Image 1: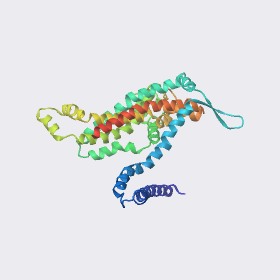
Image 2 (image 1 turned 180 degrees about the vertical axis):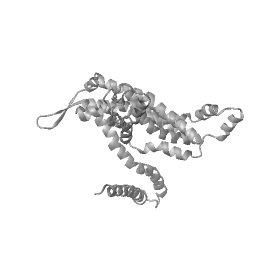
Image 3 (image 1 turned 135 degrees about the vertical axis):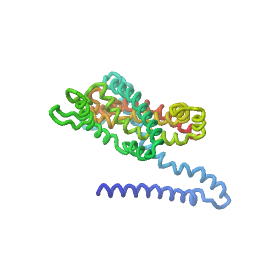
Image 4 (image 1 turned 45 degrees about the horizontal axis):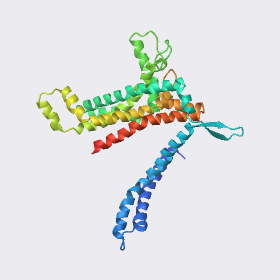
Length: 339
């Protein structure tokens, strides 16, 4: 089947299935399970109102159970077992306890990945949120601000792998006798550099070249959320500050920023979760070489290259443990902001 036709068919089946489920489930609830007639009509109506939300949530709960809860359980089980292949080709599992975690903690690559993830956490959320806030403030003051916002948000429509390919061309290096197609090397040579540099192979600094990709993508997300928050600030507070003699910097940092502090933290933590799970960019650009390993790529290497399901699952549990507290805090903070 042609991919375009397959996509259209998938949309029709998916949307049609959702509409059909909600229509038929309502009919079943109102006409079969809790019919609003007879002497128990009032009780049935109340019962239907209690059941209806759970009926609508049922597909999501089933999907979460199938694609989230069970994989977490299975990953935990695999992290505590040793997987081996028997002579007849079958797979056997033996209880290993915490041996996989001990092996993981004894590997330098794991600590390299953990250190690099810490660097990403220190740099990417701060820069993406800061640039997003700056873009939100500046574009709101321009006549063509909506066009600027569209251009800044555009990287969000690009996949991480696509963005990685774009930046890999930016960092590209050709021999000195050839014309440089990489923008960074072309600028470097134009400003007096002696020879082109393979930027992605320079230890420590290459991590920042990778981070630039995610900052470029996430700035648009931060800008859109923070722009909406800035527009929600009461004009009276800004006008009062101006009347009192506050300059634009004071208005921004002492009036606007404190009022959207909660939104800034939600954006910050959301980007933090993305950073903890970052995989595509590193995999497509360096594959964890030259001291750029991160936890998700380390997990992939163990699971699918080394075929070490025990250590790979253990590293997956580490990622989940790092993400979960931030996710819970983010949800609680979002709910607090909605009240």
